[in-house]
Image (tube, rainbow, N blue to C red; front, side, top):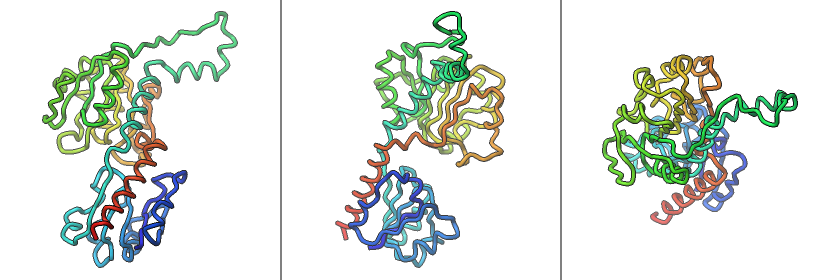
Length: 310
């Protein structure tokens, strides 16, 4: 069989993909532009894609029998056309939970401990000039017993909640679907969550119910000093409104996702004046070494299952 990887760069060059050699010929492209996709997949039996879109135009008159998505989301594949053409589509779920939660904690500690300020203080050679042994001009806090609100209590949100319990945090959650009835934690309305929580972490999908879920009106409800994280999907927080509020009110925000990725030069978040209140990372939460190894192993299993049924 011929396997074509369309965006190998998204898996990281530190990952060994020779695991797929046993299935046949392996052709790998670091990146694939939309105009190149059709030509690159036409002779493939199996294609691997993370973000490269494959729809009717790309799949029509091709030999493709299986599309392996190297991610959880399936919006980069025309599922209806694939089904009508007897092309199987397999994604991967549950590989990045620990990795996402770890970045969430990293962002929390970055803000709550004022790490940026204190690292800068030492790097700028101020400590050696001090007349006392310590420097505590920027007050910091403890995570213990803080009230944490989780928007989207799925696998990742639940894992975060479980680990926050080690810090004796009070956990509440808001179900964006309205269907989550987790009895372990208290369910509250969105307004109550925004008004009362010290830390808020978003782990929800982007859909009609969550797009622009937090706009200016909602962000105004946050208490001074609130830490807001989005490790779910870009577009859940209105970025123009967030940029505005960060320069008006003392809230802190950690984002690993934005509405258009890679981030555009025109994104208002890049123009925030109070940069110490914003911590942006380039969509890395999913991508620990362990998570990517697990991802590749699960893709391998998806291919093995597909072949075993033929």
